[in-house]
Image: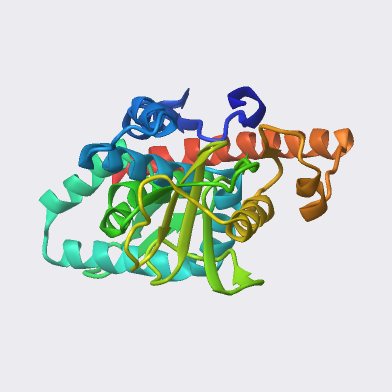
Length: 302
């Protein structure tokens, strides 16, 4: 399944002039490889320690933020919010320059080295003038997305550790499917009334991650956890399967050939569309590589 779900160059960055897979290595070392043993414990229905739950929650968070679907969401959101973000950067830089806080500025530079952000900052001061223009430039793309992922997984993730998590099982005769957008965040208002625009901290929201065909991580935010390995009703199971299928980006994976999945979401086999999307993503990689060479190198000289 890893080869089927793999997307080439999704996390590659140009750092110091060369392609780097440092970001993907970081995800693996910090969030995914540590979860392998704990996921086996979930499958065998062994008791989970507090540390096990911490590892599982980190794993869930990484699976949520690293998908192509979340990348597209990031690009749409940042295209709208970027002017305000840049203005905040400029205000912060101006304040530090006014205070002659060069040590703090050096600290910012070190942060860029470990968490590359595509930012160019320049000043324009006319000869003999005491004032000038401070200019910041960036673009929305792969590096802004990866930068935001690091922020979320280092800071925002804390809210997930405050919830009361459970492992739930489907009704007898059913199996959990999963997808290329596996973490489902549901705002549930009643049977048949819901949306898939939930977040990590909204009270009464539901977060679901299938970890194998018979077990899924589950929380209803603000509620007590279910009992260990609770088996859900047939109605609950069907609803969650519907959420999982509708939340998929392009691919759905199932242990069994399930005709109900194709009823929920029509299967499309289109080699031409696939080839076109792969070509677009390759061009996107090349464009971002050019931008990263220009912008990430420039922010070393702030």
